[in-house]
Length: 206
Image 1 (cartoon, one colour):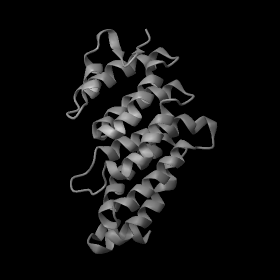
Image 2 (spheres, one colour):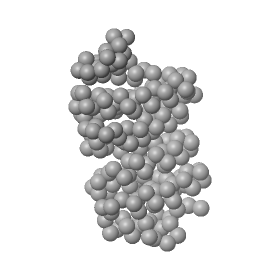
Image 3 (cartoon, helix red, strand yellow):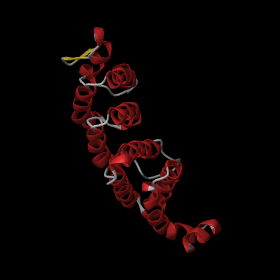
């Protein structure tokens, strides 16, 4: 692969080929072997920030959106749950950021927010539990307006989940993370102090 050789050389040639590298990497996100898939997700989390630096944040966000959409729509039923979990893993890696990367929440939120909302309502309780655990990096980066549109739906879905593992993961985790956000509104902060897990009329199921 010519792009791989040029990446090894570094410099401007490497930056010019990152789009080709992503195109070669994206199919590996759907590899039937779990270890290969996990390795591809780990690489994708790095490459997407390099692509943002080389081609711009919008181009990188478009590429990432495509990759996550593919992971969330794996056609083989036996691989579908793992695909959704790997989509969350990729999102968390990218949200962790890379020093100097221009790719930020403004480019990521428009597709990550609906993706997370879909996955906290996934048919598989295993996926829903992973989604609950993956929410903190997203919540910490959303501004007040985006949180206001996202948090109530996510909390309601997780707190009322039919599976106890999801409920157990959701309540303490989300309240702890929300309490650490500096720019909470007074109503949001009151949720974190509410007794017995009561938040805006939502009661955590036992």
